[in-house]
Length: 346
Image 1 (cartoon, one colour):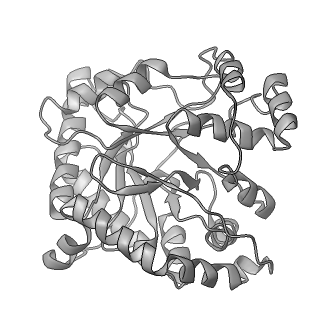
Image 2 (cartoon, rainbow, N blue to C red; image 1 turned 45 degrees about the vertical axis):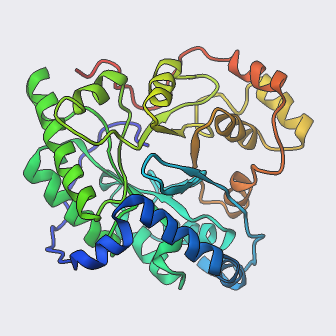
Image 3 (cartoon, helix red, strand yellow; image 1 turned 90 degrees about the vertical axis):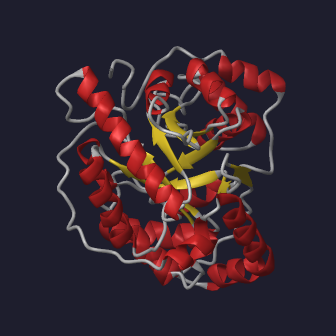
């Protein structure tokens, strides 16, 4: 998720050396990785959750109720938690405390990006949790200035270093735009970047690869020279922005949609329809909006630094919107964006 471009300071690139055998056993082939992770979680998931619940993470002092968040299948065969914790615009101590509470609460899917400049905080929080790395699903993204073969390679290695991990569960191209001076050059740079992602994916360093804020034509252009269809397209999606054409394309090509903006879309939580449905279910408007996106078949991202909201945003699986309520929310679609618009990027 990203609202608007801002100055991106390049992170110090560090050389990261991996054992090919170790990486292969963790991430490649993807189906074997998914099976291994699933087995590990079945064997120790309850113990890990109990450890997290007993911690007084982030100095909050509370022992929050541990969430039970189901997973969705990616085209790789891997599982991704249906609810992820977003980290856009949060950093430093505020992010550390929020992450600590989120982990203690039961979140295991964390979304960061090179452009957010907080990968090191995310990696440190995961390491400090005491839980196995394979319990977590980390998503990061390459910014537009990282496009191109050499830049993409250095950016991936820098992200691995900042996160303090040997592999990333999902790496996305953050958006289709880049520093290319023409439509042709922009397309070429995206294709070069995708081929580098495919290379790291084949090596097992990136367990899944995908895109964010891409229109169908952007994905199609990647496939003109690429061989791996994106596993995920992370897009702004909520009741005010249904993204019907993008969702249909993704469904046709087995690309999972991850929705951002379900909580932060301008005016959505105050909308009378959302408020009425929330009151009927004795839920918050944010919970109703997130549940709506989930029932569209998407994974969702939510972001907060408030412990109560962090917990509430994950409590989405003990209620369900009726067919009539879904229809009422669907009817709110006006095509209004609250975040980043890439529809005109060639």
